[in-house]
Length: 471
Ligand code: MN
Ligand code: MN
View (cartoon, rainbow, N blue to C red):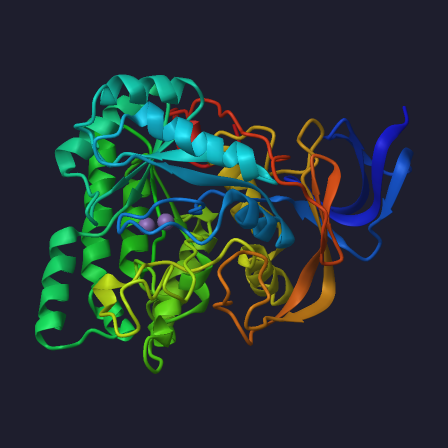
């Protein structure tokens, strides 16, 4: 059989091994792995490492924030940026407005994705107003249609109370969905913020003190207990502290249906990034905030032990101008500044440098944490691994190529790079989406609208699913 395409001689990362082999692609899928395979077209991958296309399960695109600010990125600019860094599938958010029917929010965001996405995409449904008309009926129907993940907050102006979260968890369990949680204790944050404002501490660096680590630790512990009580699977988003990771380890040891992620900015930055003249530090403001070197080490250990299963970007793009970070003016106090920073494009290169080039956890775990595990946990059976039958979403890395991040060299619409000045070894030189090259030597060859919406399988609650092992 002659295949459409063969990628020859790369060092290929499969779920079972890392070895030199050819990858045959037909009709957008991986048809075979082996040696001496023939194809109508050939890509020479000699000297390159081939990993599965990244799956980023936490990114905010073309979304209206709780503060009423629109993200800087449309699906078009966000997916271009994602692909330039090797990510070929992403899960964004469909955000319910107050009073809005969930099905209307889902339809609105689906239209945004269909219009602009250049890589494959799906949504988490943000549950912001359980009092909206037909809330529970819409929720169950949308889950059945393939919206297999929900998002709830314990804080912000869209935070739900414990009773509302328990009810959502129960519906999610019955309908087969995973509930993602932004877990920080709202009262602890409100008290810390009030104290700081009384003291006149309003700069971006004070944002860190306004989100005490106890806020995360308490809420993570409580959400683990709610998951156990409801027997419903949860994903704890963006774990930033050693103690929260320890709470998750303890909960999983009890058999709790809990998974968790962290993000590159918690692994590679500390709160010092916020301490800059004027409002400059606002570029790095996110919640939870960056923590300490000791927390970084604890998070790496939690990844090594499997307590945390996923590394997402939490891409939350706002420009450093009046449309974004400076929307409340050039002297705004931290509570009036939008939270978030760009992360879609550098998630894989930052982790490749740390995990592969510097050897921390290694190549197999790099693929697992950035692609295989998120695809498995979020119900994307054709994504996240190089194996026959899977979509041919592939990243070809030059392990020797170095890249120093510039001030404004990302392909999103944000206008700054939070890792400016960082030099990375290992760079994605070619990216394929379902067998089609969409990035080659830094050139963007993708097409807005070419991304497919991913309809997802039911999220299981069997013990085997909860261990995070392959089904
Ligand atoms: Mn969050
Ligand atoms: Mn987020």
